[in-house]
Length: 178
Image 1 (cartoon, rainbow, N blue to C red):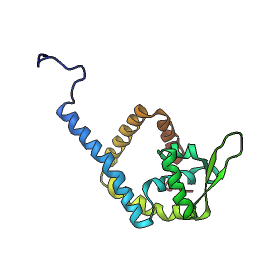
Image 2 (cartoon, helix red, strand yellow):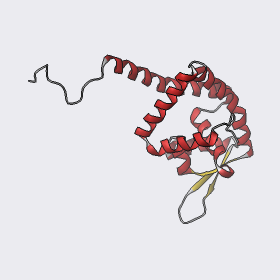
Image 3 (tube, helix red, strand yellow):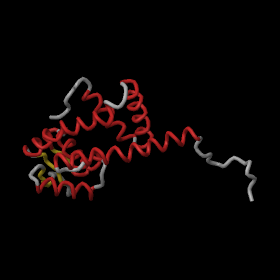
């Protein structure tokens, strides 16, 4: 039996830390649900499919390998494959064999897909504004962004580098869509 006064090896969160942690978990779980609901309601696509279209729209020529696309869209190859199948059926994306030694496949954003992305973006941006931008002061938003980048760097340095690169690319651009 241990003495109740002994400190555990891994201390519990303080009341304040627990409060902040619970709030953060609630935000990172409810925000994607709200964004997903808006896209489904208004555009008939889910948030992951929207991210796939955005990542293809950002790519030179609208083309990325499936493995790169999965990484950028933050999904497994299996999840991406199902999403691309739905996007292909709608005529927004095409798959094609990638040249070279491996058995790689590329996804290509079609003209119809680029139009779908342009049609979807304004409603999505309105929802982002409603849920985040207009809810926070400029200072709070800056602090949130800074904190998010630090957490991303701790959890996935590769994604942190991608976020930093994208931030540099889009600085000063009100509309990052192609």
